[in-house]
Image: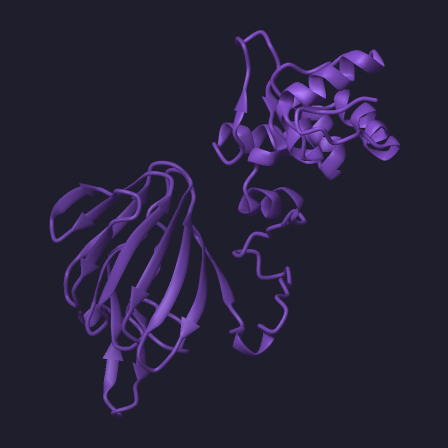
Length: 274
């Protein structure tokens, strides 16, 4: 009669479990799963003629098969340090102790993969459960230098994302009332600000006060987020590669150079007058 160190007899069910686990896990893992000592497991395996295939733990493919996930996801989580694994050398495969996987790692490992859509493509509808009532329709406007997406247009503020093509630049301009902050999200760009040429840093905000001359030039294709006061006042274009004139901010289209338009206070605005 086979007994472990505590004198407990091995049942037929435990022996079948041992045969199943022996091909996939280490002695330590098997012992913990069966509630036996490591020595008892080793003695029983010897008695039954069972060999242990893994000396350190379970392999990546085996773990992926057990959790029904792609092996690449397991490997990625190992590289990110979310799953602890060992290997004898760089030539040997990773081996994992399943009992050492944290609950957070298990949840991430088995979670459905998320598919992200480009938020700048306004033709795509991205639905989030319970979030439709918070969604604000965005407005994409094509520009000579790329395009802009206005994602917020409120009484207190305006938010835009600018995509500027490689080698293109915005107008050399200033605003009579509008105050804005520019932040580079992706790519490389130069900012001419009040006569000073600045290489923009990703994630850093640059404040443009009303009346300050500024211009952005894209070294690469770049994304810039613009947060500003409401679209009011006039944008005065000192230079523009496409020949555009000054613009009254708001819903009205740009004013062509030399032409007039009557504004809200009943005064005449001439583009060339600024």
